[in-house]
Image 1 (spheres, rainbow, N blue to C red):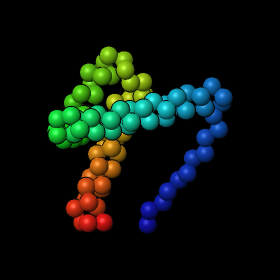
Image 2 (cartoon, rainbow, N blue to C red):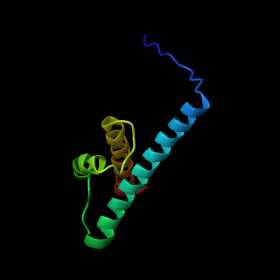
Image 3 (spheres, rainbow, N blue to C red):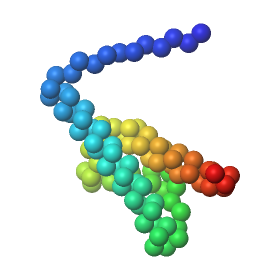
Length: 96
């Protein structure tokens, strides 16, 4: 049997603001990754995948354009974009 634990956070106002900033930054990264995929397809009919965007991520973070806490969190955002695209195309292929 698996047990799960739920931890309740009681952040201070400064901590809550920092957490919201991290979520907002992850949202901006998600939207930028989505926009990059759409633009690549519209302009050049090129399909961009997770690996392409993940390889670009190191340089983007080094330039200071992404303020998400760590690299793994950024990769998770890109995986979510890839998963969403996979689900869309799977449904299109199934005729739904």
